[in-house]
Length: 121
Image (cartoon, rainbow, N blue to C red; front, side):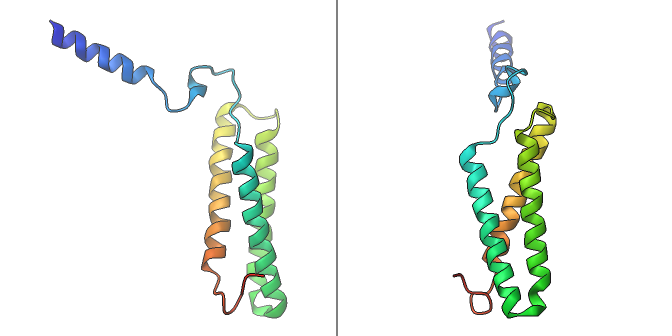
């Protein structure tokens, strides 16, 4: 009798816990951490500056500059939307995931750049 009760208690505890506190209070808006947002914007700015600087020196890399600008513009639009009151928490969560994906693209593309072809500042 005690064993089924313990299992029920453990299940109730585990199921009652959530990884993000928003589930406990659905009215509380989901936010993006300002530090995370700023780091992401800086990473994409660095990506654009470096890709476009290289494209000026090597016209064959113009596509890389265009891609960097597109990613940075998309990131800014997603962040603006996340910060607006026009979306619900579910949409905000999806947008934050997309923001993180765009930031990851900026970091990974900068890391892929050959420093001999496209050196940092």
